[in-house]
Image (cartoon, rainbow, N blue to C red):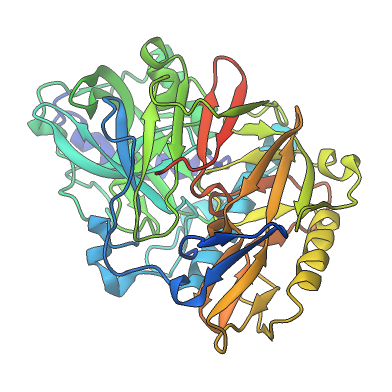
Length: 482
């Protein structure tokens, strides 16, 4: 998630409540799996498989690797967070959250281009507490350990953010409800604050987009997202346990004393972006900025997040990462073509280069230049003309009613990236299912061809996505989760 610049009052408003604590601190579901792949460049799926199961199906091949974490959908039956069923958002709400995230990303990219994105004092002073404000931090969570003794925390992982943070006791101002017990730094023997005069504190500016504050001698971080969700607290270091064999001392993280937003009862966020404060960079000595993940085919199945070179598919194909708008956070990619039903769409290469593109684990729906989306939609509708259309769902304008069908044929879609790397999108990434009577094409158009394109997490499902930060490459392999 991209962070936006916040006026100084955003941090100073909370310093009073934080200073007294310094001394006490010890230092859319997408659908079921395909059943038949036709030679006609369509995939036949049973309509009965469209909705995810209410039972968790754990089928990931990566958990036997020592540097792997299990990935689950935060609102699915494989997640502890799923127990809070009353607060699971509707698909319309999920897509609204997604819009907020996309606006946040555009805001950060605009800032890097020198455009003004500062919130005024009124915005910063009137952060809503419980008005349904949303944070598009993505759907997928992992569990890691923090502190000594280790406390397990379920955190959203996000390739579009840099700083890792979790809520901390005693919650000087406000903490939202989370599933795990809130981390108490006073009970950990390895916790310590970062001094506000240290260069490490100053490095927060690039990671959060905000100038850090100072409370007594402690460094105060503040990160506010594009929809006014936020976390403010003490910047600190602590022991991080990713797996029993992968433990990192002095990991820099935010110990949040004032946090608001719709985080789905996760305890915070893991930043996997490209800044030097991201987890990727902080563990670079061991993992060489190399990690991969597979997002599960549905909310009722599991995937993985792995660090280091182990377990990467031999069939992975790499494209070159690009630098977009000088932003240190995002992983830029070069889309050069899209195919529907086996036919490459007649889209000029200049359409994709006008705004550039990124890959993002937290954006749900892929955003395309309107010229490209129009071509994709037109061809998809033509090949789906035998099925009755349904009402649009939020930003998704191409939806179908499959009520009277036992099976349907869905056109195959693939993306081509620089280096002529063609990546087929699994059928679970082509359609977004609200109900059997409202099944939608899982893509959306940007407002303008110059807006940044985003390759979202729905389209990444079942792929092993490999990030080689040191090598400047991004890889894809099919069948990544099983």
